[in-house]
Image 1 (cartoon, helix red, strand yellow):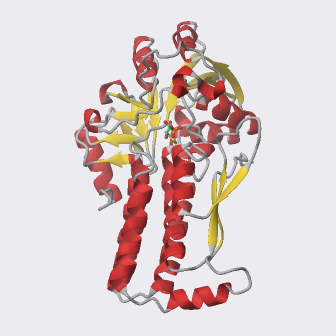
Image 2 (cartoon, helix red, strand yellow):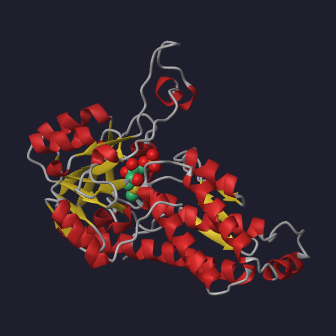
Image 3 (cartoon, rainbow, N blue to C red):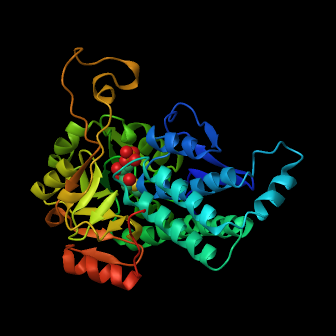
Length: 382
Ligand code: MRU
């Protein structure tokens, strides 16, 4: 029996179409969807974490490119009932330079949403390259839109398949009859499919293993408490919520047998960037002799970044720490530092589980070999 997981991102209709997002800022109290129909709307949704998690951001941005195109091509600006006229007028746009410019500016606008998760830039690069190739082959506006609609669907479908594959490859590492610890949310809510770090847990449950999860609350935005605990409960997986500071205690008591986390960017030497607090968990895992597994698709690898120190780390507003969720918990005027991510050195990582294989004791050579086998593409958006 397959585990039921929530749908995080979906394209609806089109052209003109919209992107339907499960608004993760409202979880776990409300299961509320929003529909986004402009590039700025998508940028805002990514920035305020209505859609979040590296693979989900990539998928949402790919769909977001269509929003920019349909606006520029005047799809959707027509009123209902005369949409066909919009489609026909879009079809006659044959100025390749103008179309290329529209595509480039749309991708650049979306790329500015958040700086750390490489999947955002990876997906946009792929959309842009695909579109420019179609334009070079003489596509008009309508053909460009159709080709990119297809490419976004391919990116989304691949993510679904890759999540399941990571789940299958990671399942043997999930202990039967013992718990694992996870940090942040790297489940279905963070992807277009069944998740990264949680995928092996779901597959283990599907295969009849007795699985349980300790979820770090994940200060300051509580992705563990609000999202992971909710998602695992929905899927019928036993979950125990702890605050971040309790992880050492839980490990010292022998309550967990392994750590599974996701990643926002893996550097060329195997250093792993993930939600703030992950580094502390990795240090603890090493101290207590627990395996520390990272589950991430190859689209999360960034071979252009030589090591973790070069990964741009997003800094978020001080209020998330000093008055999170509307209640002030620190004195006014206190200095606050709020990096959203940290970097775990490769030497603390037991293995990175990807959709193309398991990379044990990751290092530069191993990452290079893995990406060559995959035929990897990850270039900056121009
Ligand atoms: O700030 P967020 O919620 O987007 O951070 C998400 C994470 O850090 C996840 O662990 C990471 O993206 C892996 S997602 C499968």
